[in-house]
Length: 468
Image 1 (cartoon, rainbow, N blue to C red):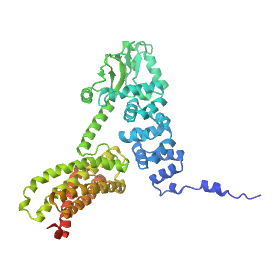
Image 2: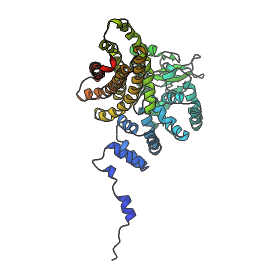
Image 3: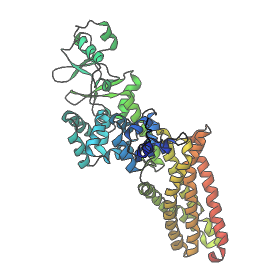
Image 4: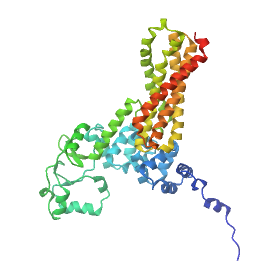
């Protein structure tokens, strides 16, 4: 019998990928599958994960690799990743894709999320995607985009579990049993009964539906529905859901037509998002994620930090009114609160982003080193920029360039330290079982104050001959 020698080329393809070795991290394996353009392997890696864990793997990739991954995996999985992503990140993921692929993914989402994403895209990109969608779905999205975000119209889904006033119990049960492909989008809704003009005239309870005969008309077992106008505010909706046990409410236009349903979960999520947004605005962060481009993140933070220079100069001018009686060392002390305060602002921005990513599940305590590297990059850029700004102020104010060097270098170094603490400390506290939201702020303030004073005074001591 002739011995068959193995084909070296086949052996090479059959050999296990070193990235798939037991010791390889999930991130390494996902990256290797992306590099190999292996959609099946990506699906096998990501599909078993919780949505937040799968999203974390996606956001750890470069922007180009994210595009590749979303093109390779099944549409349902890609849509689940987009749905799990924070709004700003989801918009960025979609707008980078080809319009046909973006339309496929968006088609898998509920209409309210479709409208949110389309509404934040450039007009050209939005129209390109809408052109690829089914005309009826595109019309729903165009209609939803017109409503304000924090209103019933902006929070509702266009898909309503509605039946004509001629329908019977059997019609409803038949749709439920047959498992219509759109039925999942009606979750949490009772059957609504509408008249010939599309106005809701009744709602049927589950109990009435199950106890009635199949040929019973819905109009005989329905009760009068509570409706809300498309203009109802988030506060109004919260009050209604706090007072009532409804899972959803039909939303009507000014003429009474049923145009969608707003769910309890949508209102709760919107309220939480608003509270989180207000908190982040107080910390001057906004909707930043560390997966965003470095220069974009730096520019967003620097805009607020630069403005604080002016406020701190005003505060320091009060002290400077007594400079005629102060020695050169006391002149250095004029800038101490500026250094500590500006560093604290930078650190609080880092705390805010970490808290946001923790709440969204896109980072974990084990990611502390990666978070630190990301923060050091932003901190170095912003520290140098702020250091130059405050150095120029000190030089112009006191007429001594060396004083500017001392203050500027101290602020730059303390900014890097502050963002390192602000980015990593919440993760370490989370690992220790402590509340990162409550403890991060005081720790950051204390450490940055002490470090700021030490840096300024130490540098001043070294350069004292040039300061007097």
